[in-house]
Length: 633
Ligand SMILES: [Fe+2]
Image 1 (tube, rainbow, N blue to C red):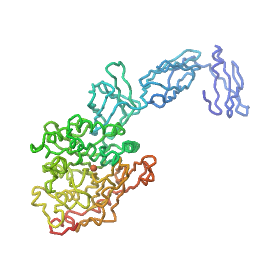
Image 2: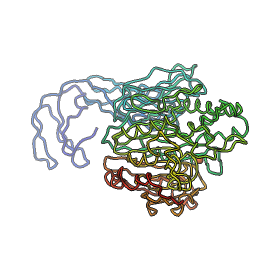
Image 3: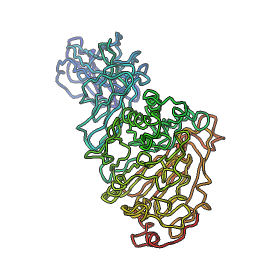
Image 4: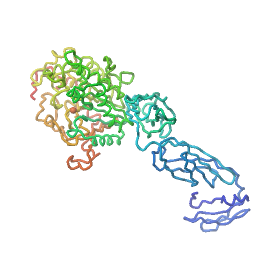
């Protein structure tokens, strides 16, 4: 029992004798001073000992009402759990049963569970009058999660959990709006051994954080194991601050060249620690070229590429949704479907599409998302381009690879990539959708994500004047857009300028770079797992490579930095902040010139000032397109 300084109390031992008398006592400093015991009125003294005790009626004989709390509320195996008695009725003895065969008679015991399961813990509290009992359930998770969970396609009322359950055959989720309080549960679903099962959570409230844990059991088991508690965020309302994170090309096929597994895992842990609402991967994460080169493109082998990435995305995907953007090395391109190519190559886009939509819960057009509505035989909806709003921001992902009718990149031996970049295109349908999405959104910030400007070449600002991105030929001498894209409104860059796109995020070049053209930030996202810590292709970002007469380009704004890491972006009603969070293996600090988890560079874009930098529809930048202004590269 605990006593406050100066507090008087009644000795329970005295009552236990069956005589309803009182002992007057007082806490003086750390000392408990018993002043007097009597059956009648008692003198009460302060610590100085001069007051008197008023008469009081004998206490009511009431058995304890048992109650207790415990922390942490979702412990893991071998983790110490502190149980705290909160019973009323002045119990004098306590008996705890922890549900795993262990007991205690301490008032506030600690206990650690050696196995993961759900345990019923009972406290029986006793005083001279009687006893009371209380039972609570303690869910103990394994120290390391065994299920591979990656969330996806979050909305303001739902999220999809893609669960790889190779250790169990039945899986369900229990969830609620407070830690440790799971008011709802899904029905158990049977998981296949190779493919994820998708568990949809619906009926959620917007702008809310939900807490959940997975339960699973094998066919031979009668009770469900419990996984660690996780949480996720539903779509934010306008005016709400939030964060998201982005990675560039992970290239797991480039081991010891551009990819280190430990560094990749470290990057994922860095990203998870900051708890963004979601994570966007910009492509070249499932590179198929090694299979093409070996002639071993099978559904199973392509699946393995996606399953391999799940082993990394699981490190953060249990608590945030993952969005995918196609890269050139995925070779998820419609041109390969042509009969002129061997079956091996024709199958690849279908295998890619099936694996991508099977292993990741990606958005399809619905009331929350818009996107590609054209189904592809053998795949269904591609889910390759899509858009959504979250807080004060619009998010748009676009894909130049599937929709180009020509080889955008070298994939088939003996078939070179197209020599006519005008043949590389997002396609009429995607362009019309992109234009509509940008024009109809009232979001304060607009973010666009694509693997790369034009889907080919090196650099960003160095390319924005070219082909369907800027309307000029490569040299910048001839404005060809009206003849080459007669049904399009404006080149992509100009469309983004006019619609006040805040930042265009791209990968492909394998470095960190920031540029700005006509008020649009072109943000190159670094590799997450490059333990050479190189700034690849930095030459393509040198201001000397960029000459855009008539465009608002400030060479001094450009920044390039080496790998590795991810971008952490915070969005608030007043500004956007982009931070480059470095990933550095232990011992590599000198080589990388950075420490792990450090923010190597950051910048903020105040909402108002970003708009002031933009040209109007009749400004010089737009007017440039109507002239034969010569661009020099
Ligand atoms: Fe790449």
